[in-house]
Image (cartoon, rainbow, N blue to C red):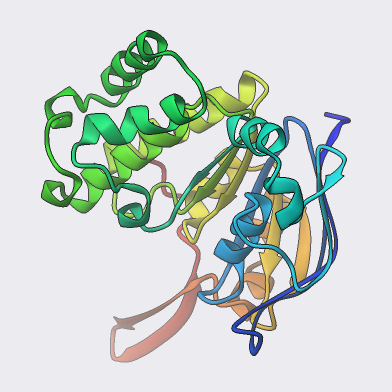
Length: 269
């Protein structure tokens, strides 16, 4: 894990030029790493994934991918854009953003076909991924006819079917039943074991230690508040509570009401 894939230096980004989303992000991602971004709503996790995916570009600072500075001019070059999209796959937090074709089947094969994969190979990948996710019965249905859990499974399938080297995952287990969430986690772990780089944004703290070796905590002021080994950061209850990452439980014991933070880190899918 020595080759740098992404290098971010003092990244700033704001929406409409007046709503800060990222304020001074420095980060290096190396090949084969498992990384998680955690933080309260609005801390910039999804924005950071979009910058890594080249969907938006920083107002200031520099982001490099594969040794080249990412900008709109670079993505206007067909060779680079195609190569980048083959290497980097993004799962959006909202599957409705990702699913836009008339049927599930068309959504899943859309990416490979756009990236120059033959129809025969795309159909082969379709068969493999739909069998893996057990969604063969959904293929002829329209995305709007699916439940939120079914939509997320299809969105994940449409990302994995491209077979990217780097997976950017925005809340991959949100809205999933425990069995499906367990399946997704196992797929993420297996992909990393095969050499893929995994970068996940999640609120789900009890999956973080499995899917990430390194954790970045994003603060309310859109900065990296802390980063380090996942086990160490997840054990720091005060740090997590300070960044709104633990649940506050209220319960009655005899005649007294107690309020205390709880992390749910002992839960297993």
